[in-house]
Image 1 (cartoon, one colour):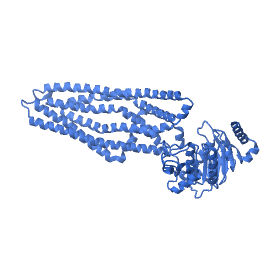
Image 2: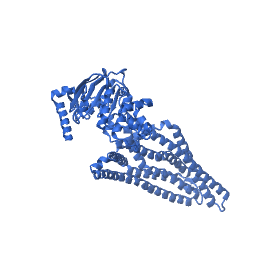
Image 3: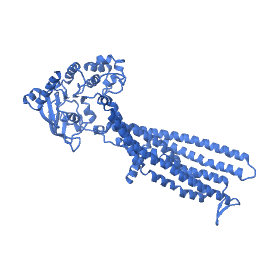
Image 4: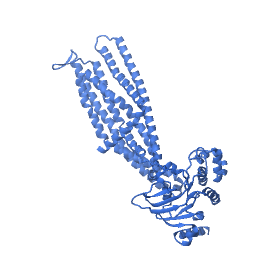
Length: 599
């Protein structure tokens, strides 16, 4: 329980730090809160005097009563206006706060290491940045406004009640904490329940996104029922956790209202007795004189007693939203606090040749499972390096290490003799052009997607890169050519998408290249053209090619054969075939499989 309180306290303190840039809105909310409370407190005094003018005399002073009623109406109007301006300040404050939170969360995500994205479901990360920030907004919009007005109302009302009749005020003061005790008793576990709820919500979003992305595969393998069952399982867990959280938090409001109703009844009974006792003169308690207590004062006191207990009801009413907001804030702060990649570096490469050396490199994704151990590779500038091997041998891991998506556990990688950890990360990655097996295209124009990473490229340069990648012909057949927005309505094949990614790299014209199965989604005729374009762009550049089809890398200057995280063979195609080792068996197995497929 202490740990939960400590977490909530830390989250609250941290959320408050986001308010510091908006002190003007905080001051405005504070000022209008004072106005609101003042007008709310003045109203009951006026109609209490009006009641005494009607009840306490033989004749009614209609002029005085009318003036007091008009004053009361003015107080109501001014209180409403004050509340409106208060809400405007609070709304602006909360929306700016959640805007900053969402912005920092997105910046934290983009600056985080690739490991974070690899180890978290995409739907869950999306839920944190979108849904959880919205939950924080909903909770704060209700909580902050009531915090400003509630505290002031409690203090000011209590002071006025003590001035009117301190005995009844003392009774109210003693009984009111009962409602706080009831609220605290009922809601002590809601934070834990809401923390579980937002976590399961993330799971549900992740599963839904996964099923939408792979809908064709799900249908192809007749796994719709399993998908539905898994969805229902997660949804049922969300229902069970959400039901418990909502049920217990919902008990708070009626429980505190019951306690407050008891307090109002006690005030009414005591006030009536005091009215009766003071009917013949000043009310005395032994030798102590309490003055008079009229019907109008009783009416005013009952109103104040209700106003005094109302903030407690309001706070209990938003317990659900506040607890939910704290749980969501914890998830958002996890993204913001994720350790960023180390971008700094003191060494620079003015003109990259492309000499790469990997010395005594060791790496594993988890300490329990070793992957790459004591790897040594030396690559000369301008070489064409092919990386081959069975699935899971470490080909993609080696590329991840070259690009510094992950850092080595031991050893070093150097480019032109400089340790890549000593080069500024953004500067280092600009040395590489990379074409992945999976195409990434944003919902922008074709021209924008080709110039991604080279925003200042001219239209002529973009079109020249597209022609070199053999995609100019299909681009011009699109509705708006290079200005066509690649939305879901534009139907282009996976191979055409990959051609656009290849054109993007050709436009950047980097000193080194990484091609990770870059032609896997392209037909044979197009692949032949792309291979010509690749040979042209790879000339004079250090190039790494991850390939499963060994027929595409026969002209490589060096072939690295990997298995179980180690380079077990290296050499040219001819040299490796002469050895009749692992590569020889791998190549012949593919050739035999191709023959069998043709038959």
